[in-house]
Length: 455
Ligand code: HEC
Ligand code: HEC
View 1 (cartoon, rainbow, N blue to C red):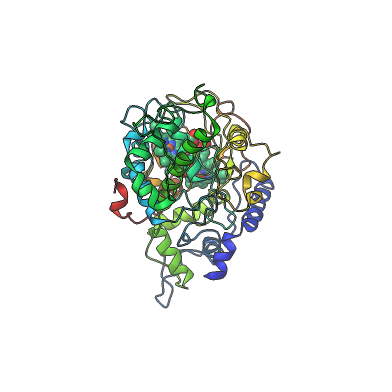
View 2 (view 1 turned 90 degrees about the vertical axis):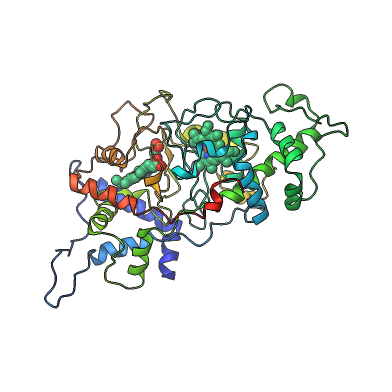
C-alpha cells in the first residue's frame, strides 16, 4: 500500500491526471460521454468453479486504489500554527467553539452554524442565520485540516479560499456582522476574564487587558475599520491581536480532531489493497455507483485523493439563485484578492511559519483567481451535510447529481466560464441512483461524542 499512498499523494500526479482527463474529453464528441476506459468483466454470474468474479475490472480497481484511499492517520502539519497539535490548546478551542459569549448578543456560537448533528454544517436553510443571514451556505468543518491531504496541500478556507489556515479562518466569523457581530477586543476581554488560566497554560503570560480597577485597556466592541481601533497605540493593538490570534489558533487545534474516516468505502478500499478479489463492505449498487464516479461521471476529475477533493477551485456552473443569494458571486476571483492583503494570512506577522516564502500565498502575488470558481469540497460524510453547493440550493444528493448530469446550470445564471469537465453526462436513472448510494458509503465512523459539546 505504501507505493500507492505515495502515488495518490503526489500533487504532480494529480495534475497529470487532470490534464489527461481533459484531453480525453476534448477528443470526444460533444454529446457522447467518454467511452469506458475499461470493459467490465462483471456479469453477476458465478464462474464454473463457483468463484464469484470480481466486481471491478483490473483497470477500475487500479484507478480506485491509485486515486482514492484512506486518509493519513494525522492531518498534514500546519506550520503557521505552532499550537495546532497541542491537546491543551484543543480543549480550550473546544470550549470557545461552543461559547455563545463570543457573539455580540450572546446567543451565537460557532456551533450554531456548524452543528455536530448535521456533520458540522448547517441544515436549517440554504444559507445560515447568526446575527444576520449569510450570503453563502455553511461548509462542514469535518476534514478541513486535510485539504487535498497531500504533502503540499494548502488548506484553503471558505468557498472562495480567502484564508489559508483554520486559525485565521476562525477570526472572520467573530467580526462578521451577519455571523457573530462581535469584535477582537471583546474576544480578547472574554479570554482575559474567563479563560486566563487555560490560556496561560498553553501560551504563557497573557497581556494585561484591564487596569487594576477593572477598566479595560481597550474598550469592548473595537475592531479595525470602526474609527476607534485606528486611534489606539500600536502596543494596545498588538496586545489585542495577540490574544485574538490565539483564539483562532486554539480553535484550529480543536477542529483538527473533527475527522470523518473509516467509512465503508475505506473498508472496501483496504480489502482490495490487501489483495482481496472483491469486498462485501459495499453492495453491488454502491459499487456500481463508484464505477460511475470514476468513469462516466468524471467526478474523479476534481474529487480525487483520500479527502475526495483536489483542494482546488473550479467553476461548476452553480446558478446564483435562492433566498439571500446575491445575483453575482465572483468566488475565487475575489477570495484571492482578499487573501493577498489579509493581515492574518500565512505570510503575515501573526503566522508562526518558519519560512514564509514557503506559504502558498507568497507565490500567488501576481495570480488571478478564476471568476465564479469555488473550492472543491471533500465528499466524506457528505450525506450528512445538506443543503449543497455554496448557494445551498440543492437539498438532496439526487439534485446534485442531476446538476452534474445536465453539465451545470443554464448559461447566464452564474459568473465566469464553466469548467471543461462540466458537460452533460448522459447518466440513466439507475446510474444516478447508484452514484447517490455510493456517496453515502463515504460516511465516516461516529466521532467521540465528547467532541460534540463544550468540554
Ligand atoms: C452565522 C453562521 C456561522 C457562524 C456563527 C460561524 N460560521 Fe463558519 N461558516 C459559515 C458560512 C456561511 C461559511 C461559508 C462562508 C464562505 O465561504 O464565504 C462558513 C465557513 C467556515 C469554515 C470554512 C470551512 C472550509 O472548509 O472552507 C470554517 C472552518 C468555519 N466556518 C468555522 C467557524 C468557526 C470556528 C466559527 C466560530 C468562531 C464559525 N465558523 C462561525 C457560517 C457560520
Ligand atoms: C470540475 C470539477 C468538479 C467535478 C468534475 C465534479 N465536482 Fe463536485 N464539486 C466541485 C466544486 C467546485 C463544488 C462546489 C461548487 C459550488 O458550491 O459552487 C462541488 C460540489 C459537490 C458537492 C456538494 C458538496 C457540498 O458540501 O455542498 C457534491 C455532493 C459533489 N460535488 C459531488 C460530485 C460528483 C458526484 C461528481 C461527479 C458526477 C462531481 N462532484 C464532479 C467540483 C467538481
